[in-house]
Amino acid sequence: MKSIRSLFGGDPRQFSMLGALVILIMLFQVLTGGKVLTPSNMMNLINGNSYVLVLAIGMVMVIVVGHIDLSVGSVAAVTGIIVALALRDWGIPWWAGILLGLAVGAAIGMWQGYWVAYVGIPGFITTLAGMMIFRGLNQYIGDSNSIPVPEELQFLGGGYLWEWGPNTGFNNSTLLLGIIAGAFVVWREWRKRVRAARVGFEPDPLPIAAIRAGLLIALISYATYLFGTGREGTSFPVPGVVLVILVIIYHVITQRTKFGRHVYAVGGNRAAAALSGVSTKRTYFFVMANMSVLAAFAGMMFIGRARASGPFDGTLWELDAIAAVFIGGAAVTGGIGTVTGSIIGGLVMATLNNGLQLMGAGSDETQIIKGLVLLAAVAFDVYNKKQGKPSIIGLLLRRRPSFRDDDAAGENAPAGGSAQAGTLDTQADQGTAVSSAPVATETSRPTRNANNERQEP
Image (tube, rainbow, N blue to C red):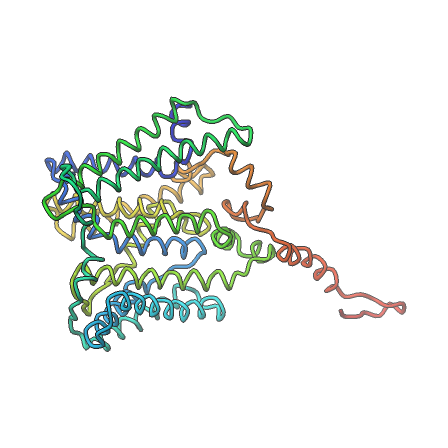
């Protein structure tokens, strides 16, 4: 057991959830007679779910701060129709259309962020109103018609990487992508060992590190083979590349930046975060704005794949994104959740949906099973927390203290409240807010003068 824990000790969050996903894929591979792990099916799975996974990236940040966004489907729909009309009627280039869509998403996000952060309306109510407003705007602007989009946008939503170079039996772009991913795994293991040695910690035994890297490289190699040897003209889907880039960017933002630490601090304990100098209003505002920008981008990816924008785009997308986040390990009370966990949770839902369809299950049965899976995942987690035991998901995601944590703890003061807020940045200006709190409490008490008369502060 110790060896297994060491094997996955670097970051067990991804490995544990990834293991569950692999088991699910293998199960459906057997039950469907080998229809799951085929190039065309896997490409369809990536193409057909990338926009929901993009929504899950933003939704996990919204849920971590303790809110929820029900308007993402409507925001995606209204952005899609605006971009489609602008490309058709105004004749602007495709890249300008994408910039316009992102600007529309940012404007909507700032609108909703204002009501949540500065007026104090709960995100649930604000985005419920937004869901109705922007759904109506989609149908009003587009006159309930479908508007086609140009080929460039279709490439973004459903295209494949280019073919180039000599005949290697693979799509060369996919092959190059696989080589880069494998090299990154080796570099990451080497960097971890170097950093551990530099700060005086004992790195994992070399065989353990080699097995861990070997397993990941084997998985990447199989994916490269699967996506690189499909029918002519296909390869690893472009939406998948976009998704990988967004996951890397938002993983860094949430785990390595000051803003990311503030998000977890506010979600874990808002009062403690405020006393530590974190601007809770600004955090809410930017999290909501970011969610709408990602929703706008997801909407553009979808109309590219569908080749047109229609009045019913985005229907119930918010529920798929929310389910992906909770299956990925986010806590219903906020403060806990990761981008990578949400992506894997979304892939679990997508695989479940795909596998059941290949088995011939109807949409009614698929919805029932997906609902039960979501309910079971959250119910087991809540039950174990009430019993005072470690959460099942939390147990799977438990991470050993590492030299990185100790190093970070020395540089950052504790934030209090959030399990992940221990690395909350406490700069000098933030420390001022903390130190001023007890002074304000002391001076607010009534005092008495020399004649024993009560004096209000």
